[in-house]
Image (cartoon, rainbow, N blue to C red; front, top):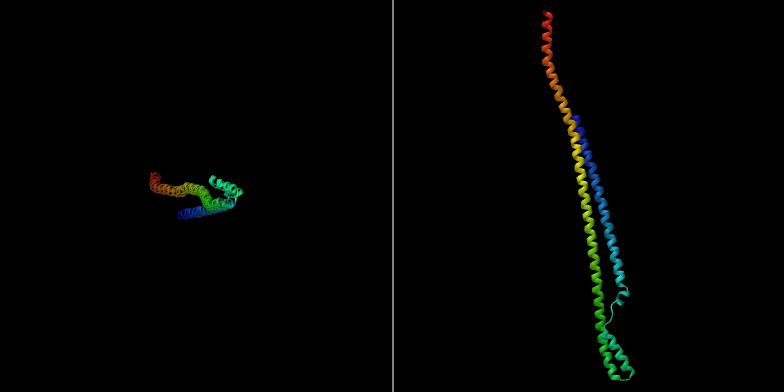
Length: 194
C-alpha cells in the first residue's frame, strides 16, 4: 500500500515539475514577445522622428498671406525707387518674417508632438492588448493544469481506494471464512462421529 502511495507522490511531483517547466516556457515566450513589441515600437518612433526632421514637413505649413503681401509691396516700392518707404517695408518685413518663422516652427513642433502622442497612444494600446493576451494565455494554462491535476489526483486516489477496498473485502472474507471454517469443521467431525 505504501508503495502505491509513494508512486502516486512521485507522479504528483513529476506532474508539478512538468507544469512548472511549461509555465516557465510560457513566461519566456511572453517576455520575448514583449521585447519584440518594444523593439518594434522603438523603430516606429525612430522612423517618425526621421520623417518629422525632414524639410518636407516644414513645407506643408503655408506662410501667412500678410507676409506675401508685404514682400510684394516691398518689391513694388523698391522698383519705383521710393527708398524710405522701401526701408520701412523692409523693417516691418524683417520683424514679420521673424514672427512667421517662430509661428511656423511652433506649428511644426506642435504637429510633431501630436504625431508622437498619437503613435505613443497606439503603441500603448498594442502593449495593453499583448499583456491581456498573455494574461489570458497564462489563465488558460492554469485551467489546463488544474483539470489535469484533478484527473491525476482522481487516478492516484482511485488506485489507493481500490486497493483499500479490495484489502477490506479480503479481510472480511478471511474473517468470515475463519468463522465458517471452524464451524464447518466441527459440523463435519460431528457428522463423522454419528
